[in-house]
Image (cartoon, rainbow, N blue to C red):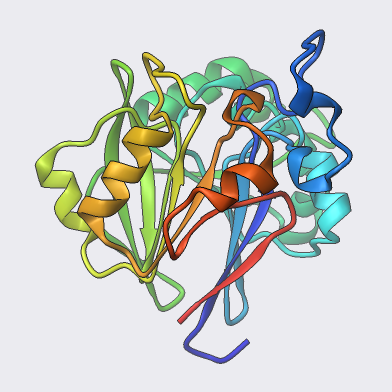
Length: 259
């Protein structure tokens, strides 16, 4: 990878219940195409000697083993829902290697993690072998991280304000239903946009395919990859044929170079 380039590895591209979905008889759940089999959404952003995880869901262990990832230097959380934070305990081997794992999140999300994983955040007499973390509570101001500008972007997940992130010329937005005009300004001149596109029918807290395509047309990135996909969107192969040029369905294991 060239010194000035970045890579995004899609560790999971499914919605909160993944594909196949338990007890569902929808045809996509029985697809033999590996691109229709989706773990919960997460991605690894890499540049030079840096590798940062976006969200750490309940499929984290499986995702890391499958992708053979050896280094994670920090974790960015978009929000506190279980499909985005449910794998935090499994970061322990990386903590043994790093000493402590930096995590980045807005204040509300950090407080939720502290409640859910109180034994990890315990400062006095911590349980032996527990994951060790270093907390970075962040706002909407941009900051530098190992030579790259990181810009938090606030979006609305239904009525819940959550974060997406821009790393250089790549932005990762998931669980979006709406975004203010002010925050849209942070998405100018993107090489790659990652965006949720849940299904065909409207949803109260996620963009559907029509809404996601309209958003892409407004932002006009060079390339867009849809993630956080449910089985209701349809078969990967068939939906892909309907998409505009330079708009793609992401799939588990996909690697995309930026720059």
